[in-house]
Length: 390
Image 1 (cartoon, rainbow, N blue to C red):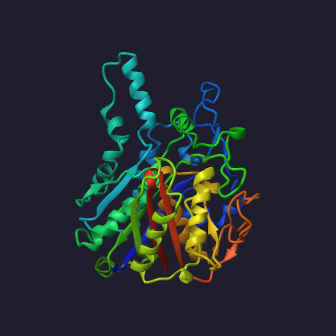
Image 2: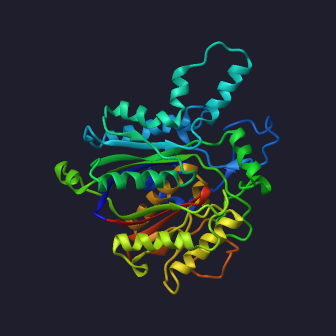
Image 3: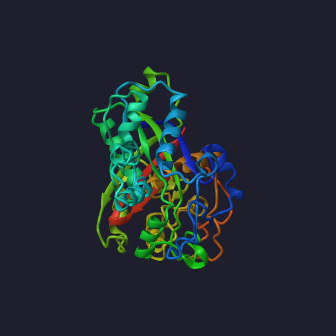
């Protein structure tokens, strides 16, 4: 696989709007908080009352919060770079439309004759990439893939494939999600995947875990090939050494309990990158805090890295499950880890599911700048990336 460079990345999540500061301050992160995005009293059927909300200018109860997030991130990158005109925009969302759908249904039920087409388009995840491309006056392909909580990694995989094939030379890639609306909380409650004990908690790899908590957030990356790097005199932050994607449907929600499919994807990533397990500084886990999912992923980890001393860390205790954006948001924090030469510990881990010391509860210094990111989504979707910070 020829190298694909990560020129830059921006993040928006519950920790703030500056990814560098967010990572440095993770140690003082409060974890899940009681929601104020909607009235808890008016929605007693929603048993999960905690989550991870965007701060600051996103605090208003705004149905277009996901679109605002995407626009803010694209504008931030646009102040730093002049993108080639044919740059692709591969940007999507899983839950962007949910609040607007509720408003649309209310308008329909009340026999309202018109509903704002602008609002409809701003909340349509199929058009999000086109809206951003139009804003930046870019003429490359604009699209996105839907793969549940592996969507952002699938988008990154798609961008890498297109660069490899020579279809594009650069891309803006990412996902945004703003899912903290009562109907969407209730949706996850009906699946049994969301945490409801004492309002909900997010403690990946802990014996007390009972499900994930949603987090509002997103990320946008600027990636390109070497020719673009040299032509525009860009200084990259990292290189994608390999990225794989596949799926084996064990059940719609649970991953392959035999771990064979996940291990095959990991082996493929190693072969593509020319790296080996001992080259990896840490395993950036998907671990959502569900009882079944965390066990399976930890089993994958111990089998892939048997007798290799490297930490396994999930960032979802700090930022929640940012749904379709989670893979790339957490990879951005992985890049911050290697940039700072230390990995933050697992948040709130007091009763680890194993006595394996690699489930770290304190900061750990890193001796390598290469790490592995795993994304295990519903429907058996798997993506593995090996990335090296520069």
